[in-house]
Length: 215
Image (cartoon, rainbow, N blue to C red; front, top):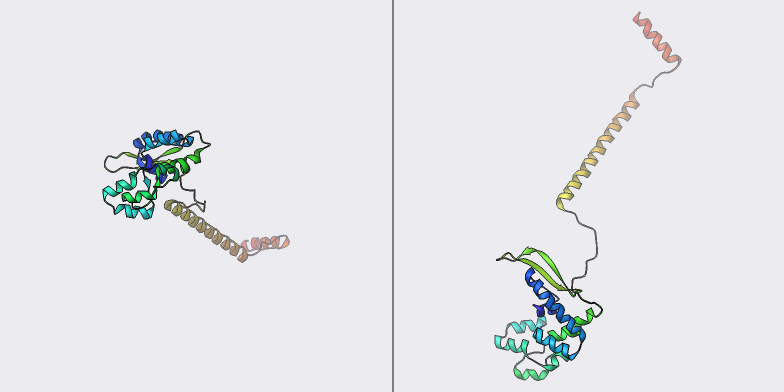
């Protein structure tokens, strides 16, 4: 699991296993940061070095029998830690291609990233899903700095139900505005058709005439 973590930057496993392997990985990175021969030997003894395969090499590796796979991944070489590759002379031992080393990657690529960091090289992210079969909690164990870069913030999307609610509110607001506009139009039309109120002497004469007719 530690080898896979150094190769891929993150691994998905159960929460219990992630908590168990995390201190081991932190110790390996601390040893690799020292950069001495003794620390390299100690890392190799703890980690059991193996090769790192590229995508092209992985296809060829999958087609190999188990015996040749073992030779590719476990071929020992003192030069592997310094140069990061199996020497060409190892092809005589039926090693079909040159592969980089996990220990080399740890010491020369991963450890220098945390030169100014006193600890906390890994993080555990608990996942919402569970493992099928025993229903164990799953987690993501990853190296700090290996996470995917954040995407550019664009326009936030909202849920379907919320969108329907907002559309309904806008529809009702538009309906209310149309109803108010109809009322205003009717009121304006009524005011335009009604006779203007009479004031002064004209109003007094009209009231006297109405009173005479009643008599």
